[in-house]
Amino acid sequence: MVASSEPTTEVKKSRSALLLGGGGARAAYQVGVLKAIAELVPEGAPNPFPIICGTSAGSINTVALASNAEDFHHGVDQIISVWSNFELNQVFYADGKSLFKRIAQWAWSNLGPGTWHKGPSSILDNQPLRELLNKYISFERIDNAIESGHLHGYALTACSYTSGESTTFYDGVPEISNWLRNHREGQREKMNIEHLMASSAIPVLFPSVKLGDEHFGDGSMRQISPISPALHLGAEKILIIGLRTKAISNEFEPPLYRPTLGQISGYVLDTLFLNSLQSDIERMERMNRTLIDGTASNGDSLKVIEHLVISPSLDIANIAMNHFLELPKSFRIALRFLGMAKANSRRLISYLMFTKTFCQELIELGYNDAMAQRDEIIEFLEK
Image (cartoon, rainbow, N blue to C red):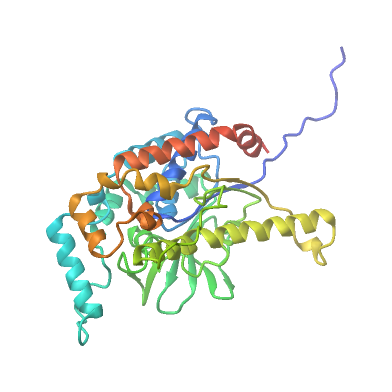
């Protein structure tokens, strides 16, 4: 047989991005999806996502993966180890003395007569989370991953209380440029733990963080285009791990009675963490259809963005209520004091349920949901 004289060419894979949104304790679901993806990637292989973008709790998983970009399995194993053994006191002080002192000081500072400027700016003190992150996260390893080519870029988004702008802090290869859009910007920066704390500072619950001359809070606030950072960093396809339940027909049932503070707070957090990402996905899908149909007026400058979305098949809020009694007694009492311990507060509680068994159940749910889309994930990774 005569060998073909035609040269063989290797098909270049599209540059993939991983997008991890916010959601407090719900982000344990992302860990389960990552566990499944790790089983579909060869042992010891580098991170299959050269671009990783995160917001709020998703930013923590983002940095954990980025700091282990040279060994995806090791990074995922480390994340699983932390989330599978979470306790509330690792995120914020939940013992009775610290908790009630903090709540009393916050209430007097914000609701009492006059203004007590020295009082806490948030209901909860998340200093334990800062200590936990300092223990596990190495930004030096991220710098090395960028230099070695294992990481093209990564981004964390936070919202400036000072300017009202949504700011995406990023780092990566030199060719990535800053961007400026309406009420949102991308800024290259050498990040540290404070950027993580800022991105995950849920308003009212956790304190804002000062970066430079501005105070920042949770990146989900005013993030009207969560997919945008991945595109600015050069993504050609995006795997999105959502935290909004697929079946939502009865998710927002009308209350039979006047809504409680906990119920209202839960809806606010749902809007903050879940709705903008879903809306952005829908916009991207509409644009893709327009481009495929050839009806876009400026189609030459736009391209179809391949994407894959993995989201919960079960209502995470309902799962949270099954674990309510696992919360420390002092925290349950505090929730009752604030009118947030009833079943209709389950959405709010699901964002704060940093308990071992709840996180383990979400990891299992994420794993099973991802494995149900196994073929789609493999196809996505191979393109």
